[in-house]
Amino acid sequence: LQEMEQMGVKPNVVTFSTLIDNCAKADQPDVNWVSKCFELMEARGLKPGLLTFNFAIAAYGKLGDIDAATRLLREMEQMGLKPNVMTFNKLIGAHAKAEVGDLERVLDMLKMMKVRGLKPNDATLSQAISACRSKQDVARLKQHFTKIAAGR
Image (cartoon, rainbow, N blue to C red):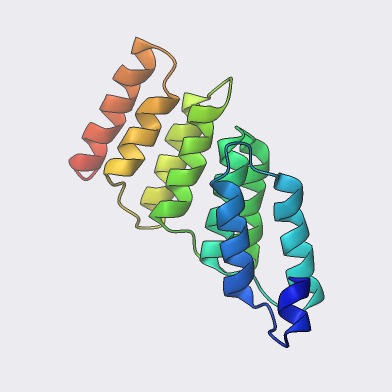
């Protein structure tokens, strides 16, 4: 960032989103760096966009930090940004990576998607299945997706 600024190039939302995305793709994302990017954006008067939040949610999700990922969902909505299918896929994926996944929270997220008019896709189903911890979880998830497919 310093080099960019020394060259007269101002970092923008795309710059920070790209940095956060690269962080999220690391084996062990540095969520302190993600937080720092948000701070630097705020200091420059930049507002994070939907992709910025999605990448940040992915970083926290990769570490299984469900609470932080969910907090980012609330923050983005408070800023007037509407989560998309990718947002929920990342949140559901966080449950798959957490040591203690919570199928109830996954089902709640699927319900939140429905309320927002978002249709789960193949990636949603894959992430949700990965969050299951037992055969009973898979059966309940199957029931839920059957209802979604039937439009209920």
